[in-house]
Structures are given as structure tokens and as C-alpha cells.
Image (cartoon, rainbow, N blue to C red; front, side, top):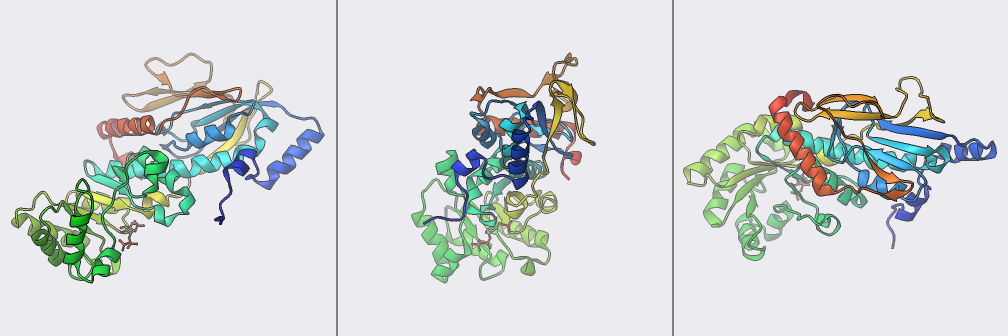
Length: 381
Ligand code: PCP
């Protein structure tokens, strides 16, 4: 049995490429043209870089050098996130997969980062792998985790990423018992003690009624989840406020309110004062891919670039307190007080630096703290 997923070997061989690279290879080979080039990857918007782990696997073994900013690093418009130095024919056909690896992972990481910024001290969970092809689940959860989410729901994250997965309960569990109280109690009885008891409270009755039922019937309750469908929401804020009130007057101030279902960045901004945690699906996992492009910027040691792109191999120098960058030619003098952020990852086909998910996440979280000091607004939209 095989799902319709291209396999690792075909990606590695460069079969997963756009046809025009196959023709380009043929033409260049036949005419003996194979210049030494510097090519860089840029886009016109800011974001959080992710997907380098797969790029390193893809480019490993090719006779090229590869430079990049670290995963988890904030990039600004037109800054190179990856630079390749080598003969064009040695890497031409890999452009398609290389871009695919970073366009999608970086978009998920960037959305996760924005949601974390919007949520302030409140939690954001990645609930959205069900919206995307299952073959992408580990990539999505890794990118969301790098971007800063507090938990990921896909169980495969444990096997593929070595991080715990988390979650609450589906409506199907409640309906299987045909009784929410029976379902909550069964969950409490059966599921490992370390798992937070977050009861889904919108299956049959009003959220307030079910939340009261939940705290009155489940002693070890940690939270309630409102996954209220949009057709039933009316004023979601008022519903949540009412639930909070009813919990508080029953001395359940510690019972957290988790909300989920079609949440946007605006929802998080509007509800974060009354909600403890947000389960976000499509808005993170289904983020619109970043439009990274790979362009030649030097040919045989000379500046060369197409219209709209700046020629020359570049370095990015960053002031880490203000998160302000300056881009200069690669070997020019560094500006005072700024550190270079582009590093070499592959030297003549050999990986000389790895990209770890944990350090990428730490870097993203460090930048979130800096942005909280310098002003969140311009990073939200
Ligand atoms: C799912 C889950 C989350 C949703 C998806 C997140 O809902 O309960 O709240 O994804 P979204 O942000 O794209 O909406 P359902 O599919 O309603 O699943 P269930 O009824 O089993 O909770």
C-alpha cells in the first residue's frame, strides 16, 4: 500500500522539480556553459525562517557551499535567508524542492510567531495538522513549535520530533457516550493522571450550562474548552465572560478557559484578556506560503542580477537589542555594534553546522521578548 506522496529518494535526486530546469540542464550541458555563481533566496516580507533542516538534507553531497540565517531567526524584506555558492548546474534542479521546504515551513513558523505575539502571556496550541496533507504533519508541528506555540496536537510529533503532543477531547467522545457527564468522567478515570482534564463543554447544551455541569461533576477538572461553531456563537466574548463568571462564583478561578474553532489573529487579540489558551488550526497550519525566490547575484566573480534584485553576495548585520539590520557585501567591514547572522552550513557538500529545532525555538522566543520591548504592532500584520 502506498499513499500518493513522492518519496525521499526522488526529492533527493531532483526529480521533484519544475520541467524548465530539466530543459535548462540540457541546454547548458550541450553548450558547455556552467558558470560559477552566487545565488540567494529572498522575499519581500518579514518572517521567521524555518525548513533549513530539510534544505541541508537536500543539498548535502552536492559540490556547493551553502550559507543561511539560523532557523527561528527573524528576517526582513529582501534579506538573503540562504546563499548558495557553486556551479549552476550542480544545484539548478534542486531549486523547486529547496523553495518548497522553506516557503511552507517559514509561513507556518511566522504565523505561530504572530499568534504568540498576539496572545501575550496566554497559550497558543497548534491544532491544525488535520487541515493539511498528513505527510506534512511533522513539518507543520516542527515549524509551529519553532515559531513559539506552547503545544502541538499531532501525536506523530512524539515519534518524528521527540516533543510531547497534547489536546483535549473530540465531540465524538461525548456523543459516543450520548452523555457529556459520563464521557468527562470516563476520560478522567482512564486517561493518564498527568494529562490536564480539559472538558469540552459545547456539545449538547449552552456552554455555561455544560461548564457548570463539568465543574460540578469532575473533581480534578483543569479546564473547559469552547469549540462553539460560528453559527451558534452570537457574541463569543459574552459567552466566554458568562462561563468565567459561573466558574468563579463556584470557586473555580483556576479552571482554565480554552477556546478553538476557526480562530484568527484578531480573535486572539480580542479575547486574550478572558481566555487562557487558544487552539488554532487553519490560521497556523494552513498559512499562505511565503513567496521566497532564488536568484543569481554573482556570475564568475562579477556582480550579476536580474531587474528588481540587488547583485553581490551579502551578509546581514544585526543589532540584537533593537532587532535592526544592515545588509552589506559579504566581506565588507561589519558596522559597529552589529553581529553577522548568515553562517556557513555546507562546505563542499559536507554539513558543517546542524540546525536544531530547540535552538530555533529559543531564538524565536528570544525575539518575541525583544519585540515586546520595542513594540508589537508592526509585527502583527
Ligand atoms: C477541530 C478541533 C479544533 C479545530 C478543529 C481547529 O474541530 O476541535 O478546535 O481547527 P480550525 O482552527 O481550523 O477550526 P472539529 O473538526 O469540530 O473537531 P471536534 O468536533 O472533534 O472537536
